Image 1: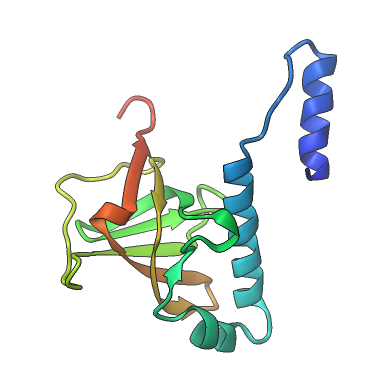
Image 2: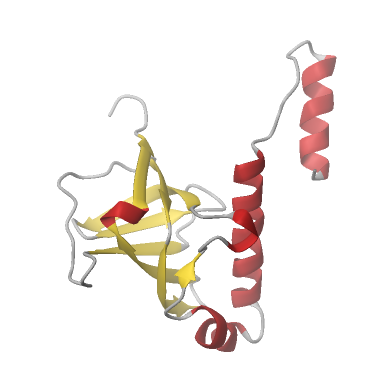
Length: 151
């Protein structure tokens, strides 16, 4: 457990709020995302993408992680979502929605900013600055979890 997680547990117990139990699945997926992002952000990031990630299913079960979880920042079209994983307001990932045959797919509704989604998909493009990793995601690989309150 990271130091910040330990501090939250100690503060919660000290102030009578009970134990704070981090979700191990969320911790694993965030740790994997941070590792991927660090590798891509390093000096050999473009080579890492081209040799290890391009056209691969990500996360694809790596380290026991089947889905990344992020927050919708914008929906550029019925077929494109921009999300943040590390921070809910920091664009890091573009999801291009496709059918199983690779054709453009369309969502039937607008997904509001702040909605939590989970996804797995094929890594297709990478831009180091500003950082952006693009995935092709089939609709069956996109889980829309919850919409922000009031929307």
